Image 1: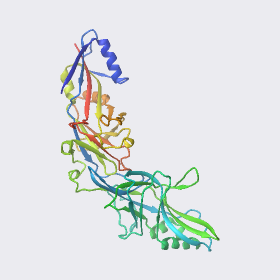
Image 2: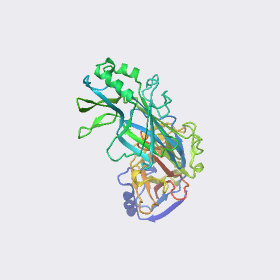
Image 3: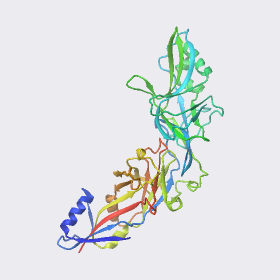
Length: 436
């Protein structure tokens, strides 16, 4: 641990430290100090950090209000793909005349997310579920590793260029027989269109599957049904188009049971980078991944930070006061889009086998270097955490887990420099005052 020394009058030390720590409370290690004595400010910035990547065993993806479908090839993590499962409900207020004539039926999907190359052609197939979507016994959620049977052959496919920012929904044309059958049921005032359970028995739902060979983008669509300011329906639904006496009309079958809609998100387990992460207990050191660590939403990749030698501060003696501690976290140059950098991270204390303990209420400061692309970094004050640790009778195992904010309903990815990264290293900085 290197030290940078500076002997200056106590008054000026106070001014410097107040500018560093603002309103943070400080706790002295040892006996009370005498301001009349000489004072030494010590900046410690070479603490050992162990940085690594870990992965959750499963991640809740149901009830997120986002249908994720697509695939893309990540330059570091390999192929990422997502299928989405959901149920379709009966229409509200069915009032169709006997003279109604069927025109077409489409699956309508309102964009609310994308990740990847939207200039590449995307291919999505629509399959019908072969079994009912349901929670396992004693469960209240579905996960990125959950799966249900669906038809091998799709009922429809669509090749298209994504347009997520143009305010227009994606429509996938479905087979005429499906829409014509449902329109006849509506004309007959069938009980099947007034009883949701009966309808689901006949039509369990849909699965959207992307082309995993040539995919280049992950797309997100709003699951819940809503109405915009212009009265236009937003969300996911099947729309049956028909006409009555020359008038064009439609009948909507909305996505229902949104708590059961979920995304099955997978990654290429043969990728040598991630093959070592067989369980949540597994730890992939940044020394084995080009001195980088990874965060990947949807898949469940997290960055693990361990501070093993906090107790070294105590070796400075019983007249030292820890005034300030911060982590400096640096994304790896040219591995990210400035417009998509998160404002910060979800931060959790963890045990030795990567189980979540307490979520920490930390405030991250993001400093961007978009001009020279050299020194973009996050700074986070962990003074209180370090002081609490130093007050313990036994120094605990200091492990943090960082996750991206949209951990379960996106596929955002971020690459961070590990503690020994040549240009973007992660650092712990501690300011200590010693009194003589």
